[in-house]
Image (cartoon, rainbow, N blue to C red; front, top):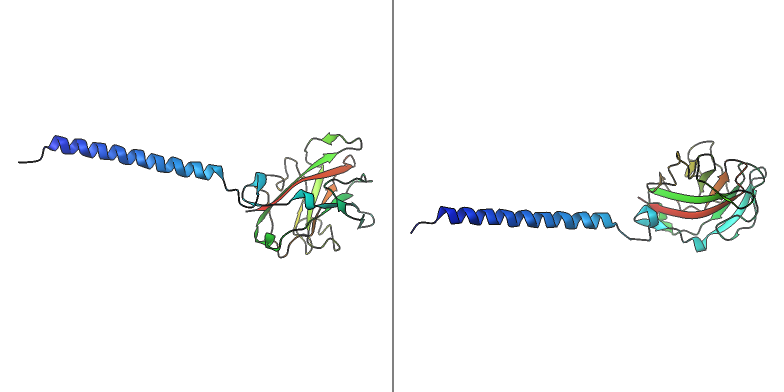
Length: 201
């Protein structure tokens, strides 16, 4: 007896439908895993990476005129108001050695006026300098990275600032940073609170 061509055709159609359904399920599973992201290392808003435990941070008030800072104390917000523009809060960090394996960093802060009122994030509120040795040069060059300052960026938290975004700013670390200096870019900023430092990418 010969084979029925109609039955064979129907079997092929059924097989094609099953394959199509299986492919769709595989694609949906892959997309679901990709969108859920990875939790590794507590990356926070910036995805997989290393987020600094803010309870380990110390803060000091840095005076630009003297290039000196007060004795660091536990906390993430300066307690002494900045006297003038470009004074800043020095946040002392205790980081693992392998933080140098990351290529990007995200840093976020809140800025406050003399009355303690929070200022809306804006260009011209603050600038950030990532520092290797807190007892060395804390400002670095006028623009860009320096020998002791692997990152210097203006407009922290503002529209033009990149380091405060989820993508962050690129850094090339040859040693673990010892601190980050956040300077008041205008005289109205008197207090700065650190809310996030995440190494990632």
